[in-house]
Length: 91
Image 1 (cartoon, rainbow, N blue to C red):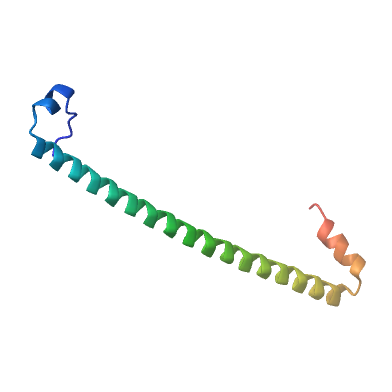
Image 2: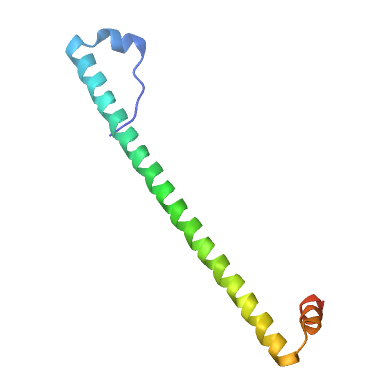
């Protein structure tokens, strides 16, 4: 289907029924587009919430791993001072 713009003169030459049909079709198209937009928005919000939950879970796992590494390092080297030295090294 070819997209074209109808000029004012062409609209003036159309019958009332044709103009009503065009308007009705246009209104239906706007409704469909609006519904699709709302669906996309709600899907986006759902995915955003899921992503935030997943990130929070990952952050909790990272915190647990850091704690486990600190405990194992302390058990291995026996002093919390050594832990700070190992964590602060730049090499």
